[in-house]
Every structure is written in C-alpha cells, then in structure tokens.
Image (tube, rainbow over all chains, first blue to last red):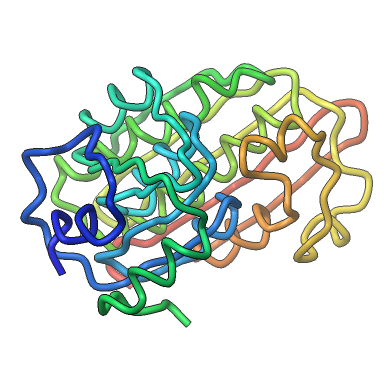
Length: 114
Length: 140
C-alpha cells in the first residue's frame, strides 16, 4: 500500500513529507509506548500513535519508520515537522481513535506485526 | 582506521534526547554500513541515551567505529542502579511520570539494549553513576 492510500483510508491530513506519498508500506503497529515501538524489527512499517512529541519522531528515525499516523486528533508541532523533514518521515494527522484507525487500516490490507 | 565521536547528554533534557544517536546514524549511513546493523546500533544507543536523560544528572557518550565493529561507551553521573539484575528484568522501572509521558519508562530499555548488542556490559555504583559498554559487530 502507498503512504498516500494510508492517508486517504483514515481521512487524514498530511502535515509533513507530502513529497514522499508514493512510498510503499506493508505493516502497521499501534502504540503510545515508544519502548514497544523500539523492539519492532520489521521494515516498511506505519506507526499509529496518540503520542505527539519530539521523541515520537526520534523513535521513528531510529526504527526506520517512514510514516506516522497521529490518532485522536493529536497535533504535530513545528519542531516535530522540522525533525520529520530532516529524516524523510511522512506525518499524518487523523481525527479518529486508535481503535477505529487501526480497524480501517487493517481492513484496507495493512498487516499486523504479530 | 578508527573514527571517534563524543557527545554530552544532559539529564532531563528531553528536547535533545536522541541527538547523539541521530548523528551516529548519519555517520553510519555515510559509511554504507548495512541498514540492519545501523538499526541495531541506533536503537541500542537511543535507548541508552534516553536512559541518561531520564535517570542521570548528565553523561558522556563515546562511539568508536572501525571496519569490524561499533563500540559505544556511555558513562553517566547519577543515582546509579542498586540492583542491576532487577533493572535488567523486562517491566522493572523506576522512571518518573514525566518520563512515562514521553513514551518511555516501561522497563524495556535495558533488555532491548542487550537484545540489539553483540556484547553488553553494565556497571553501576549507587550515588555515583552508571557505565554501559555496547558493541555491535558489522559483519556478524
């Protein structure tokens, strides 16, 4: 699935990385706990999270995660966008809950990690 | 040839946590190191860097890169760890609510550092600080 399709399926707004919407993703992982995210070995991963701070972006950077969907209407700050741009990370703001967003993307074909 | 990098880390400064790991990642990419190796190095280093920010007063990170391995030494001045065996157990944490709000402090950092390392050593003295040695081999 392309990142642009992820944004479309969740009715999201792309707030960073709009030039990278053709990237392919295969898996998704939903968590507000960055310690959990850092244990994931898979590539081509979308992170769904309600944790909107700079460490979310740092975690994505270290884990080679190229797309983050911020659920529950969490807003991305300018500092997060700056860091995201430096690291080629697409950020999408989404108005729905973690549960609903996960369901939408699961039904659309993104695979779970386990 | 060995490359050396040094970084200072301030306790409590979550806005800069990850800066050193980010710089190391950049250098390893420039050196065309296998992305899988880079990920192991930077995940381990980032967890350790966050630990200094979360628990210590301040610390230093020294990274050595050569053709064989990446060696990271993290030394902090801080409260130290009273029981290392307990600290290495998944789920054990002494993190503050502020640290947990940042998405950490679930007692997973030290075990995850070990999982991503080829060699891992931890020494600590209560009231003095903690020292971590992490080695990841490039071609293993």
